[in-house]
Image 1 (cartoon, one colour):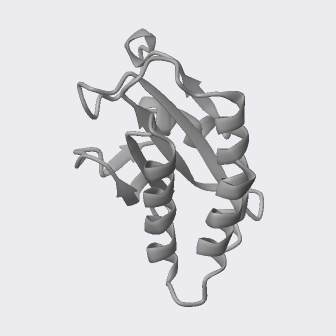
Image 2 (cartoon, rainbow, N blue to C red):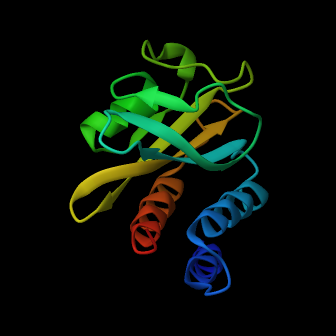
Length: 149
């Protein structure tokens, strides 16, 4: 994991790319390096509205380009301000289905100046794949991402 953190840091610290390009590269790296990450993307607070708007992502296209606060796992994290791990999406009553292949999801908030400004959302085609190490990596990553926003 430390090697992956180094590679993620070098992307975020790169002076050659703008923020959007950095986030897209982060999504690509996670997608390539962790086989059970099948959709990896960022959502951000949409201005002053209580909704999230889709940012850079890697994976199948999604209809969920805008998510109201409270709706789905992403919308819940926007309200709760806490990481949410869903081992089996079919057991979650507030799940917004993006793909019939999605079996599990993890969503980690991004804070800037104490405010929840966005999140990373990862879907997996495997039931219960996310480890404590994955969670720690993603929480570390969201802290690092906040520094470039």
